Structures are given as C-alpha cells and as structure tokens.
Length: 107
View 1 (spheres, rainbow, N blue to C red):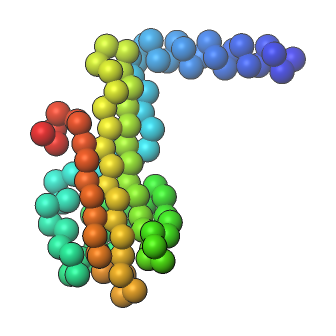
View 2 (cartoon, rainbow, N blue to C red; view 1 turned 90 degrees about the horizontal axis):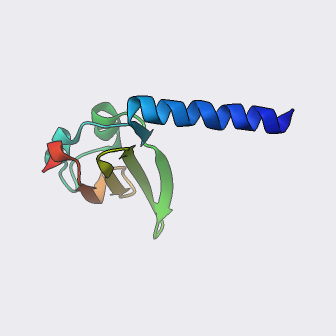
View 3 (cartoon, one colour; view 1 turned 120 degrees about the vertical axis):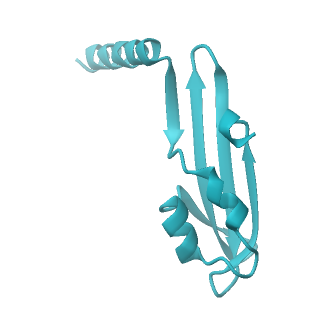
C-alpha cells in the first residue's frame, strides 16, 4: 500500500513538473525594496512589512539573523534563485545584509 502511494505521488509530481515546466521553493519576495535597506536605520519590523515573515531565523555570531530565499527550477530554463540575508543588532536594526540573485528581473 505504501509503495503504491509513493508511486502515485511521484507520478503526480512528475506530471506537474512537466505540465507547468517549473518548481519553486520559498516565497518569491519583491527585490525592489532591497535598495532601501539602510544599516543602523532599517528595523526588523520594516523588513517584515516589506518582505513578509522570513523563511529562516537564526543566530550569527550572537546576533539575530533572518533569511529570505526563493529558488525555482525550470525544465527549460535551468535554476534561478535569490537570497536576502540580514543580521540585526541588539535593537533589531540592520547590522549587515547581503543580497544575491540570478533572476532576470533583478539584473
């Protein structure tokens, strides 16, 4: 029974991949606000308003960090992704951040 369910699941996922031509992971956050991030000024609350809740939360050398991530695989276009990684100071203001993307709209 489990084997049959697994086979059906694989077939459905394969069909969707072929039919739609791409699969995505994460939320496709809007990159246009990245240019507005200012170190020591922009707050975590502002980032949440601009990008929504982070995909991951963590600790970087004792400071809180958030990660926003989106990746999509296309049957015909390869892999495209973008990531915004933010480290906050003790007052929840941006201490540092990095943004990388190979999506056409971010070039």
